[in-house]
Amino acid sequence: MRYSYSSLGTLAQCERRFSLRYREGLRPAGPKPWALLRGSAWHAVMQAQSLNVGQYWGSLLQEMPEQIEVIDGVWAEPTIDSIIDALKEWEIAQESEYLDAMREEYGDLLSARMWDLWIRFNHSGNVDKDFGRPLLVELDWTRTLPNGLEATGRADLVYLDPETDQVVVRDWKLNQSWPQTPSAIEDLINSQNHFNAWGVADVLRNLSGDKELVPSAVEYARARFKKPATPAMTKGTKNAPPRLAKSTTDFDAYTYREWCREQELVMDQTVYDELAGQRDKWFRFTRKPLLYSVYSQHVISASKQAARAETITTEDSIPVYGSHCAFCEYATLCRTDLVGGRVPYDEIVFADYGLRRSSRREIPKEGSAN
Image (cartoon, rainbow, N blue to C red; front, side):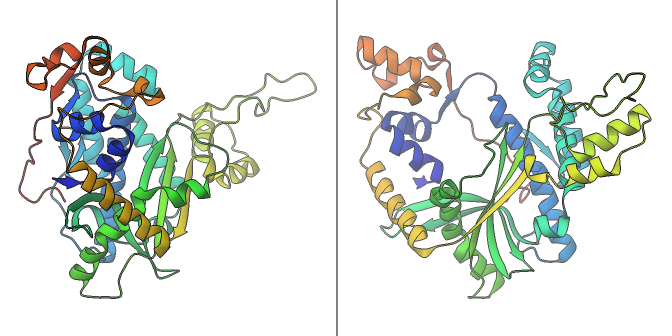
């Protein structure tokens, strides 16, 4: 078995959940959670742009895929237009009640929200600075741990920063909201990017032929998914003309510009410039140097957890009860075990617990996924 960052993190939290999810392949039978659905779509959008920027600069160390996966079972060519079209086709096939729930959750259909987010991301930033020179995009890697077991993972983006000459391993994150100040400590101890930096190091050296081309920094690129508010005007009085309402401020420069255009209002350049300087309200990049002490400890920890996983079977796995159980997809099964005793695994009717075995996803064309 190959061990990923997610599987080892799950094992550290609960043996039972690890066994059911990663050894037995059990997943919730219902639709994919809203947060995962939008996260997958955003990753596809950023994957497509990263690939195209890398192709433009000739910096990619991998072949350009013919198709990429947008969300489960939905594939598209690696362009923003193809991705949005694929999402629209997928939405057409959904039940009206499901789409109504999506509008309630997202503020609009997923295709519309992804298009708006991509437009605002590029309007507020600089493509050269935001993407640098992409080297590897959504790369699946496998590497042997110090104890001989295999680790696996996927690096969202590895790029060369032409200004600093750093090789950066980036993780795309889509948050509904976030704290006012990013946590530098959280970014430092979050092992996913450090694990990916270790995982792709050999791939970088082998594909480039440059032994010195190794990761030197890790970075989190966060996008805020919350839909911007619609600007509003005061009613105005006899002595004071209508003006932009101060009570509504949660919008960005692009939203303000488009609203002025729709309302046929003259845009206040001062307001626009002020909003343009507040990009970190919607998009944040936090980069940290790749510290060997942190990097090595993550690999050592992964080795220990993987060795522990080798000794655990589904029948003998022990559930760890805690606050995390409230969000666990296997909570109903564990409650049954707790009240009536452990149900032998081969006698479980998974549908009774809202579970199903995950099926292997098919790749439409050979070489279409990294």
